[in-house]
Length: 202
Ligand SMILES: CSC[C@@H](O)[C@@H](O)C(=O)COP(=O)(O)O
Ligand SMILES: [Zn+2]
Image (cartoon, rainbow, N blue to C red; front, top):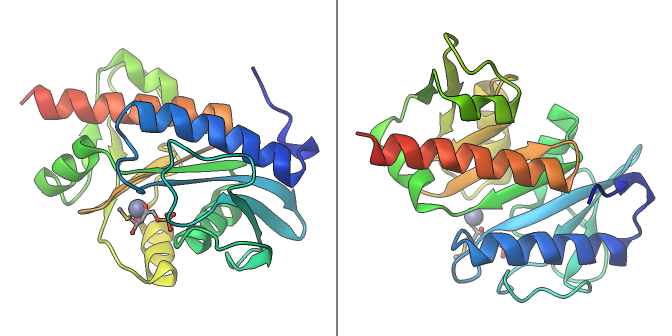
């Protein structure tokens, strides 16, 4: 189902994020309380619904969501994800309508093997991120981790490749974005598939 995100109120956004989150958690990509999700509710001013901090992301309810501004600061209620500022930065930078952050084993393992970036080529699945399946090299950037979201945002801005709607954060996980939660999920599944292929194929 395609969701018209421009029409979502905060609770509806919470329901969408809870459903997306349950799916990622079922894949084992949000173990413990790891990972976070957001959806853009307005552009001017920038407002996002972001998952609340510290929850089991497989058990979110529509209320476990916080409205944040362009700096990731709470506009109403609750404690937003510790990474809300980075979500807002990605949304502002890329024009994405939804951002996904998951802690996958493959992203951390491949970030260790290829700290300069992970190159994909000649794989049909590249079409899932809008790239040609053949002959073109597409790099998934790897950036160093930080607990400072401004620092992480600067690194993401410097490293990102417009052809790849994702970055690996070394020793941490994966950030992926898309026009809406559904496309962000598809991009996440495709990028994770590519990472798992590289990991198992060597
Ligand atoms: C296992 S805790 C991981 C956190 O430090 C963080 O990286 C994370 O992904 C979840 O933080 P949260 O504040 O719940 O959105
Ligand atoms: Zn994280």
